[in-house]
Image (tube, rainbow, N blue to C red; front, top):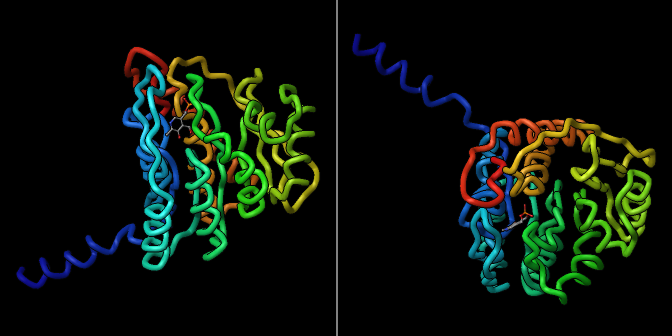
Amino acid sequence: MHLKRIDCLPMALSTNRTRPVVLAIAGYDPSSGAGITADIKTITAQGCYGVTCITSLTVQSTRGVRSVEPVEGKLITEILDELVTDIEISAVKIGMLGTAEATRAVTGFLKRYSPRRVVLDPVLVSSSGASLLAKDGLPLLKDRLVGLVSVITPNAAEAATLTGLKVDTLEEMELAARRLRQMGARSVIVTGGHLDPPSDLIIAETSPTPVILTGVKVLSRSTHGTGCAFSTALACKLAQGRNLVPAAKAAKSFVETSLKNAPLLGRGIGPVV
Ligand code: PLP
């Protein structure tokens, strides 16, 4: 009897102990619709382990962003160095950076450690209209950061700001993706949640032919954080060893399911996860 009990213990402890680690570098949204706390929910739902570095604190709720308080670049650098020298990171997702200083700190981190799978969600403006990257951060993001990541996932508005092109239709999304590749991006996914049916356009490093992922329109008022959920789920699937297109398909389907099951919270645009 006594021996049997001892045998059970190591078996119970030995399950599910090798989850890939995903590092989310992003802003803090206290309502957990977007940003770091939402990313942790997505990473956990995908079966990965999340570690984080906060670039900015925001005051916001489902009613929108009220203010943004940046985190010092030196602190961001120290946090990233501390994490990466201790824990094996399988993928990195970069979201809201907030300032040029934070963009510089993250760029320096990528140059020092060259992590293998890096997803950049180029967060520029919230859906409520608040600026989430200072004006002097944009050239740094375009000229330095874009060339250091594995894949960039702009929505149509972000792709338009980054390229200077008009981006609305699938044809325009393709032109913008090609321009982003000329700007140094290895792979590009322009998300088309504004289209009906919602369709994302992928140009992968390994193949110049664009791939279009067509989804299903889910009518919901809980759409806050869909970009974060997509890019973070994508980072998780890449961390689990999937190639870009299957990883993007899985991430898109995660967002669709999340939209259908989103908790109905707040007086404004509710959280997607
Ligand atoms: N706040 C933070 C911290 C974010 O990272 C983002 C988007 O990535 C937003 C707000 C904006 O989210 P949405 O455009 O869904 O309102």
